Figure 1: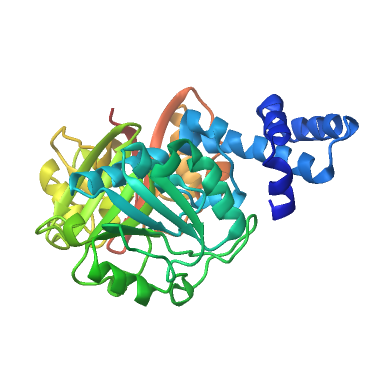
Figure 2 (figure 1 turned 180 degrees about the vertical axis):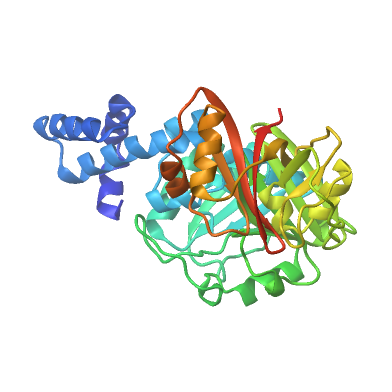
Length: 396
């Protein structure tokens, strides 16, 4: 969406038309709605804006639930936005620390600011892109004077009157549709400036989960977040927002539920042990935070192999920090022998998990030519120089 399209949309008639169009999902729906709107005499800018927003609202439901039906988006802004359930948890930490007003620097379409304002915090939201700032202003308008939205850079923002900051540096090239990732040295605002700000006042800073651990400041709490099975972000907390004695944390959320592992630093891995009755795969946040050892000790489990993020145990225990599998048997790793073994067992539906081996699950599944009514999980990994294939069932 460019400014011409946004200007056409942000009128009473444009917004009313968007509500009338409702959801537009398939390509066929797009063609039909475009034809109808053009035939009714609407301008190309308005038609493009309305149809684009109707499609984005469908996609946004996964992050924003029912709120998506009254929000505006850019495609890039939606992809980079924090899902509302996670934003609310971030906001809860600010409120628990006694923060009453926060500056959201790099607010995007306003996802995190929605979380802050929804918990009663005052927000100064700032974004360097004019279109994005205008969309954030629309999305945050229901909160009235509690939220102000400014078009400008994070570095130039007036922080007087705020007690803490939230930073979400741009990690992709500028644009509203197709964007590409940039090097950490090209983030905006620059990392050096952002880290210095965190050292001077309480704050949180959102980064990608694969951010270089060696580049993390020593005096922050680093919290990796997994949501519904995907590792979505790393948050750095400073000042009164960082918990005493916590330098590593793994937050795991599923729907409205959440669990967390915390430690004063990277946890030492547990010893390797022989394959047991169960194999456990740690959540991505646990792996990124290097808290696999903490999760293993809860399960009375050992490492399946050195440096490999699979645990094994004999006890029928699981936890929110892992996905657990009951091992049926070891099966051949060779594709032909494996296909024959699966056919003999009537397995027609197969989930394939792999670590430490060069296997494309999609290609392998095609070669296996599965047939049968049974379902199972195939775990492929390496123990030393030996490749290991395990047939298993998910627990729970």
